[in-house]
Amino acid sequence: MSVEQIKLGYIDTTVRTTDETFLSALRAGRMPWEVMRPFPEPGADYLRAGDDVIDEVDTAFRAFITGEELEETGEFPDGLVEAIRHRGYSRLRQPVDMGGFNLDAYTLLRVLERIAMWSIAAANTLAITNTVGPNAILRVLEPSPLRDYLTERIAAGVICAFGDSSPDGQNNRFSSLTATLDEDGSAYILNGRKLFTGNAPIADLIAVSATAEIGGEPAVVFPFLDTSTPGFQVSSDIEFIGYRGFPDGEMRFDNVRVPVEHVLTGVEEPERLRTLTPVAVEARIFNVVSMALALGRRCAEWSRDFVNRRRIDGLPLARYDEVQRRVSLTLAELFAVETIAQWALLSPSPDTLFEQIAAKPLAARLAWRIADRTATLLGGEGVETAASKLR
Image (cartoon, rainbow, N blue to C red; front, top):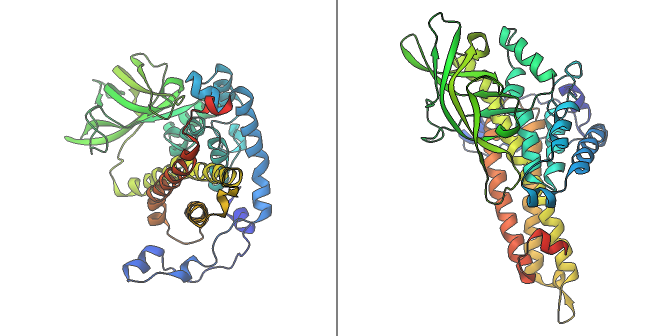
């Protein structure tokens, strides 16, 4: 769905005449309410247009596994991984002629939210392959051999991953993974490791950050390669507490050869940064804000059910003032996360990069508060495992 089609779905499509942004107004010391009006609330027709895809993906995932089963087994069944590859679920934002669904950003967020309602691990697997690394970068590449290569591989239905965390720490300017030009300059040779790479155990196509020497100076480059490339291996599966079933791993590179035309260079040039930064920022929204929305909705449901069925001396918990305050605060914070998501992905403002960057930490913090408040409330009945609750 195009940006124009999204706007047609708004309840109010008034065109803003000011170029002032949220951030520029804050810098001037005031809250810019006029910048946020009309607020980009999606209309009913627009939401209905995405419901079929949301229902299809959700039904397909649930046919293979439930959240409780994934928590128990700790891994996806082979059939689900193949479904992601061959039904187009690994390229939800790509055009139809590539076997994709051509989803706009907000509809993709709703797809991820629906899956996350029953499994955060399953939703994040889908989020990473669609919004991080090869799939995301393809959408902003100029015509080139790299673009042709990624187009061909992604159209084939590959599952994608992106490796950035190095063993010596995350967010370093230069990665400990090295990329060295071979003697004839036709390929980069990769050596090193990457940790905490989501989707690594099931990925077919990956991108990684690496350090090369260009013009006598260290430079950041992004090689793209198939996981069948000689010298590459997923050397260890990584499991997280509270995140069971999410495929994550350590990757090792032992003289892995990547053609120079499959390596994105010059990423520190201002123009290149301006291209890649919005892609990276948007990915944070898909991978965090969608999960925060799902968590908030489930907590609101569980809280409502709990306070209406539990009683103290014959009076429902829902009648007590303090309980009402807690549940109301959960609903208010859930509404705040919804508002953040809509503004970050649907805003007609000329520049929302600041708000998009802020969306991840704001949504994560609100979701944490909602979860903590809900666990405190439901703790009155005992904090059980999912299997125990089912029994």
